[in-house]
Length: 130
Image (cartoon, rainbow, N blue to C red; front, side):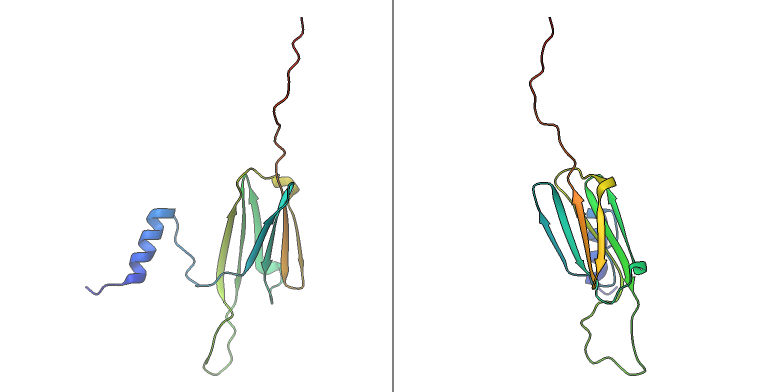
């Protein structure tokens, strides 16, 4: 039997993470930054329409997934840099997020998602009634 390093890599990833990695080999570029009150995720989706991707927020994570169809003429590709096929990106945050307040804007090929942090109650002095 011939050794297949890709098969071994997929098997290792499945054991380690419980899922199969995206086989398309591409992911859109992303910037993530934090302010005191929120996180901002900017995903570059040039050439996409809003119907070609989805966004899900849960507890402490944000998931962006979609698919770009392969474009090809009648000839043979000489060079390919733009990704095509399905993609999925998951961003885990270090604290819970306010899922119901997540806002997304898609303009000029950029998806900008504002992810508010869930307000945490800090310590407070409790008055004792007598």
